[in-house]
Image 1 (cartoon, rainbow, N blue to C red):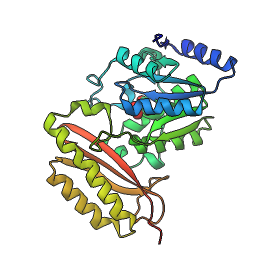
Image 2 (image 1 turned 30 degrees about the vertical axis):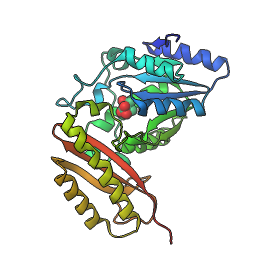
Image 3 (image 1 turned 135 degrees about the horizontal axis):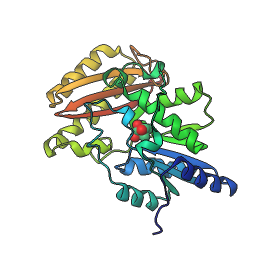
Length: 286
Ligand code: PAF
């Protein structure tokens, strides 16, 4: 297999993208933090369905981690990532340094509202500001036609949709359904942190989420259904549940019952590992 070209600077990225543009190609960007798994490769495959070329970025973005979080130990494997990206037809890897993305004197921030409020926004207050900053930079650097994100991080996806609309960034933001392990656990680079015992317990998250989504789809008030689901997770050794909430699928405003397309979102801890997941909930017609 031919080695995947790697751009380390904005100038190298722009040169690669410009060459594709000159040849008349359309371009999709797949932003990642590396430690790639099947979920990421599904994003590249979707990018190649929509566009002629895909550039993937691998950048563990310091501005979206709080000081006590896992920035330093976040899994990094550039050679492995490059091989996986090449195997599914990605044409360019953009792997900038922290200094390239945030040079000396960098002092700009983005303030968010709407879909960034509550859920993970309440428990990891620095996160979406950092995501917004890095994604805005990546979009301005690569100027792709499409930007592809996983629905696993559904709140992030809605934040980015709102951000690109509000800032008139000319890109089509595309969400790709979550890729799951055989027992339903959503694929995530952080699943590596689970012990064998925690990994076995983790499958209860998807099971509970699926049952709860089915119950909510009938249109009954959400309160009691969500309480039962939280009790079930606690009984299944989830040590802390940050949230289990029903929200409007687009705005992410809280919903009391399912009367329009909704999303059920959860964040819960197994030991020291925080898992997030979500499912669509469509009202049952009839
Ligand atoms: O979802 C991720 O991996 C990251 O939040 C992203 C979008 C690449 C920004 O750093």
